[in-house]
Length: 55
View (cartoon, rainbow, N blue to C red):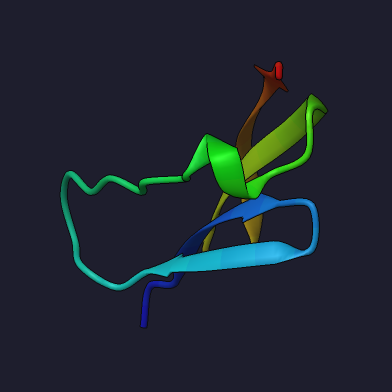
């Protein structure tokens, strides 16, 4: 079984469908600052990116 997720802080969002998927994060529900988010597929880190939230 293939398992993928997007991890932001202590938040883990599972992606359960194969193919193209998307995740919506509401910036107004996060504190202002720099966040690193990571795509994990089958337990392997695929990529990490930075996201800046400003007030």
